[in-house]
Length: 416
Image (cartoon, rainbow, N blue to C red; front, side, top):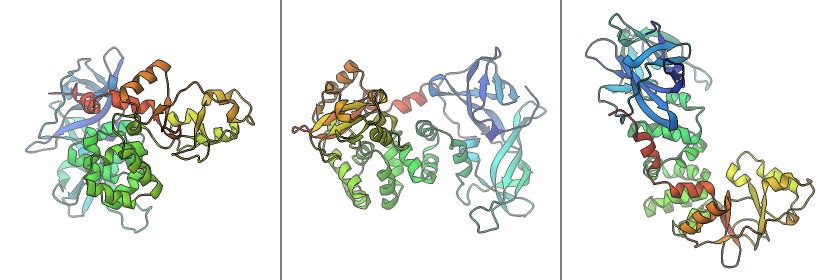
């Protein structure tokens, strides 16, 4: 084992390699076991391997830590991971915790901690990197930093709630789906605390990736005004699915606080059966007139806030150009627009072979249609052929997978 001191926050994301030099995963966290006396010792690492599966690697199977990588013996136990009562995860639970300095100089927050091997070859907490409270009211001010040994502080577990700043900093570069998986791996109360500290846009993105039960748990902890702000930022179909699981009185209270157009879209979607095109569709496709030029359509789908799956095509209708639209005329695919001059009109580029589906089309028919024609999106119309929305391939995948697929993915291979 390399005799070196390692700061845990810097280990997050480091590659884990076997003795032959092949990468087997990356470090997610380090687990500590508290003892009756002395500093806590590291029991092992939570490691993400192929398929986002997370497993426990005991510290005894780590042969080297350093230079941005971790070397293991190559033997990985794939049993279900269950955090033991005396264990705590450093990044998920310890960073951001308040401590009191025994010299009487006040409190500080743990921003990082180091572990190093002792004489018995146990890896124990050696130093804490702390930050004192800021002394200025300026929003840009930060408190002074200092190092302290474990025996120089008392943990303040029963005092002020833990700060989530340090934990959120380690999650800052994660995509919404990966952040959702990271939150699912936290204890329930901690997951809700961290979710509440996300900004509204980030929280909206994460909620779209979480299972229904966790969505409801988080929304239930928000007041109506913030819940309305977050749901406003979600895709209407995802917001409608979430609100269908809330008590009717709470749903109506939130809808009253939302943007009028967004609320109307959600009310409309909630009227449809979950297993029909209406229950799956989004009401915000890219809609243009037949006179729109290729250049204008490209500018529309180029906007940053447009999801890639919706930017793959525009739908051409008669006025009005917001759902519920005028009569549906056809679809123009992004690749087709690339082959024509910027001044070309969309009316000349229509794909009229892509047949729209009625709003009450059953989910089984939709699955077969997507598979048969290798579609990215499918227009949904009413009996008068007016465009109501589109079903996208990600909506189809969400319905094909079991409701608890995220939880199953996480639980299949953890330590028992």
